[in-house]
Length: 402
Ligand code: GLA
Image (cartoon, rainbow, N blue to C red; front, side, top):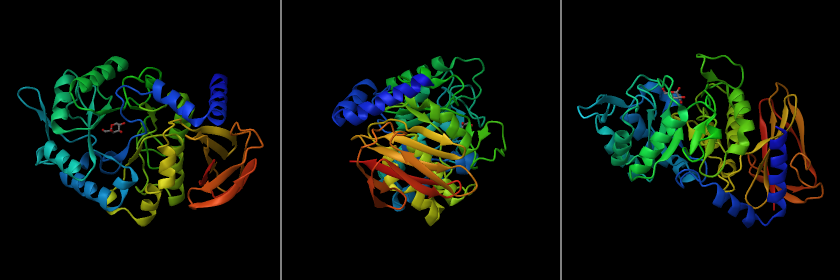
């Protein structure tokens, strides 16, 4: 950890004192990932958290329409991803088909529809014999499946890790990464190995994003869970945070899809979930029913100032800079030398939280502008620290910079 801390200080100092263009150039040259795609964390929608195996063609079409009508597309949510359970059987030649009941028009027609609305299309498979939902996996069919996806116009593949037995994770993911490259189409590769084999250590030139944990449950922090593999939002946060040195343009730590709008957390908690994911430069894949979301949900998912923190082109994952019990300060270096700053109260009562220049690895004398990203207003100038009272389970989020 001490090495990481030193690294962060070094990086912070660099970002601050070097001309911004120099820091960005280094990032851009060194860290392009496996295929030049996903230079900012992918954004979009995924069917799993809300619809699980009940996904069908109509839901995907309605969601696509709603992504446009609600302003999600224009806010940067790009990929419409069908998760597990779209599959039918393999045909006589081994090519995968869609479930004819749920997807009667076929996947190509759906992909065309999504593209016609100015969005991109994603799909799901698995490195084992079967997907986690028990559908045909890609093992032994990697090149054939990648070719099929390319023919269907797939832009994003989420690749899961169920039924893999003693398969080597690096080998399994590298094989599909190669198949995708050979397919002739640019396809973002989203690895879903749950962090078991520590993909952040070896996947920078294989995947564009890798899950770092088991599945999210729609729960702030109580650890009540339906399955062993599910974890509350706070648990995922704490597992994903220390991995900040491994994220960068083209290769992101994926703290799992969003639960915002699914009903298990309060609006305050969802604001925290969304803000924290943005601080961690995690992919922002909405996981709710976009066609029927309420105004509170919309105001969270469509907060363009928070989205901009996630999407900042410097591509540095933010980290916890200070903690005292339930009170935390998080910082994320931004292109141009500023910081996103988040004050987080994990506790059950309001808490005064103070962020200081020292926590940001900044010299005390720095002067900067401060903007509140949830109040959407400028709140004066930074002169060494900022303090505010944060509601239980809530955040205050700012940018501090030139
Ligand atoms: C795993 C993944 C989830 C989801 C399901 C589908 O649990 O981690 O994100 O894709 O499989 O069955």
